[in-house]
Image (cartoon, rainbow over all chains, first blue to last red; front, side, top):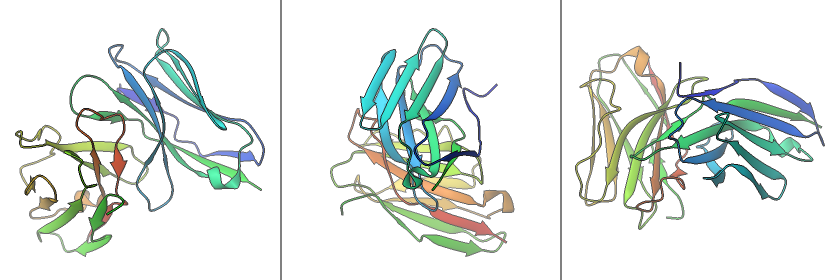
Length: 110
Length: 114
């Protein structure tokens, strides 16, 4: 079992829809939870990070962490075509590296 | 520069040749990472540098892979005797010390081994 699991998609939604992206993880010791967005032929860029259970909002984006279920989510409200990208969850424990999910490809159609 | 810079952006090589990939981190970032991303796959950790400390090489897949970081800044990832399975995007990232949750990535080098 991979440490971080993510549905690869693709997930196709109409413009304006609410998008839900999810990851599950296996190691309950994980402390920090991040979401990265990666456009085609670009490196990932950090969207949000959090270290506690609950919700964290930033504009149209909400990150949600449920440590009891080892489940993290990213919600995108009023999705735009410019949100079309691959979304990677990443999780950090003590040590030197982030562990990434495989990414979910999102397509927002005008 | 303003961001992490990687060169070349694309590299095509023949099986058995050696290649060198370069990374210029953000100025002032003491932590530097190399990751590999295969088609449709997540990011695979390769190696980590922090300041003058010994690098964490635990992710290097074989002894054909090596990396160095000169002067605490620029890093070079070297792959010797390339194989077709080495074809991937090689991503470099940097961060301030102790802020691994805020990694900044370069655009990567697309390596194709024919």
